Image (cartoon, rainbow, N blue to C red; front, side):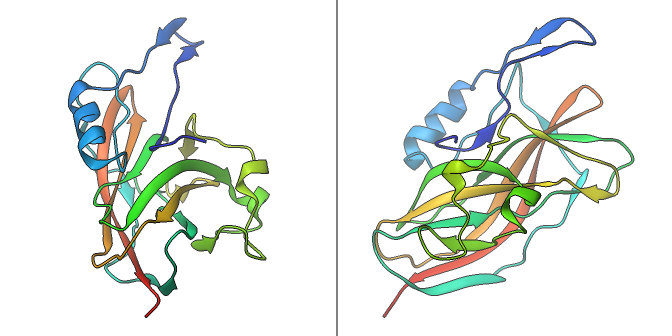
Length: 197
């Protein structure tokens, strides 16, 4: 499981016989340090282009829980990326962009829908019916969404409640490859999490 976001690891491209090395941009490292680990973007050689191949996402306040307790850990499903283009999209990274004070991203993972028995949109760690994510295969190396379809994988973030939360999680970002090029695209997250009064 990744600690800050999921991202594709270095891999051998058999078709071309070359190693695609991934490196974190210095700017991304600065953002990571400044945000306390809430987000970073996995990259290789250069900035990704703005992407438009993905559809979906959640609108503001679409998913919420107002009975959180400090110290509680939640698993939140990032919006499933739907490939609205005519070519395969390889999702290589995902993250929450606007993590508010009171929440800390302590891990990211990508899990197969079939292993989880469905999509847990938000689950409290250790509670009944919450998948044991530590025992599931993590597909953070990336996954493919075919044209006109969702992938069979769910990107998840493990959130620790560290204090009062007064703002929402509204924006997530995916990085992906398509046609040999890298892209970055924002999608809506729509998560409201508040401490129990």
